[in-house]
Image: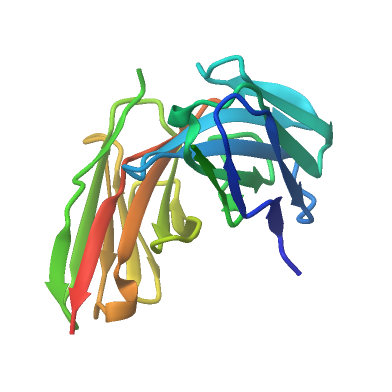
Length: 114
Length: 109
């Protein structure tokens, strides 16, 4: 049974479109994350939720909006997609607060904006 | 700005050798330290974590932490071609986790 799952795995879309990525974890963890990994492979944190509350909100364009309906789910909605949004987006979860516990990553969503 | 620095590599070692991966961090108050392995096209997976100064061993892997020098390393003994991957160092403190850019390791048969 997959611990952290993401859908879709691949997403190809045109500039200006709006898209969403979904994430679910069945580990019973309290904290979930969204990361962006660009072509240079640098893994950058975007957002983190702990028990449905936003606790990390890095400097990302406000076209990116996370939403956590419950602590097992964290979705990422992206408005008005731009070429520079092309990247792999990873969801992750941890037992507790960031910085103290190891994180478990989903398989990633490869977003390509044309 | 809290920073985690790693040599991007590539680091190339022959099969059976010891691979040494290094990581330095800028936040002296950092409390937890993690090593992740990422194969090409895959997601990062946890190898080890360490919280206290000294060495921690798990199979062929040893993590070493020196908080005074703000330095954490990962040693891989008896390196195998299957160890070829990018290794990410992550440092945590105060509800924050930062990743290094990763070191690409190639183990040649």
